[in-house]
Length: 308
Image (cartoon, rainbow, N blue to C red):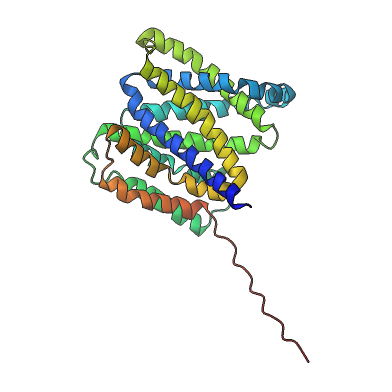
């Protein structure tokens, strides 16, 4: 692999993680001007419109397989587009961006656990130790917090945990279905079905609670979530994985809580607390231990003695 190519892959991964971290800051900013249902629907409406030209042909070519797996794709859309995003944006009412991203960083561990339970992937001591460290670190992030007894804190962390679990199930289903359906066709189907699921909820919510105002702040929020977080980061991440591999990209993904904490402090002046800062390396190290497998030891070949 060329050095420049490797640097490009790392930069793309950092760009993706930075944008996704900003989405947690967005979840903290949005409640003052837009509810979670409206933001989730408008995000995926924008993303679906932009991705449409790139997925029409793959969808036409793969329509039989898409119909065949329609129920599975619908469940994926419900989990990955509707449930995950609604809960992330709703948890922004109750939880700071650093803790939101810290719980989200546990997603690879949830994927590992679910794969072990339902896909018969083997649990190893390394995986179990890493999972225990990650879970313990998340618990540590609320110990000593002045919000520890707050219903809001418990509610926010509960929402983010369910969101991370929903995304983990979506990821496993996507990974399995990707073997049978073209990648872009699957992405397009998931985007469109998820947006259609959100449409009646958005209309009902708008009628009863009011539709969001069309102002500069709301437009910027929707464009960030719909263009940067849903599309640009998604494309950059997949390009990064193709250049430097899933393992290296995954290591960079673990930096998301750091980016989220820095961005939230810089943009909205939100300090997560020393307990969360101390918990972050424990969570990230635990996830790393559980998910990233060590390289196999290199065999040492001893030089054979030459005979005269």
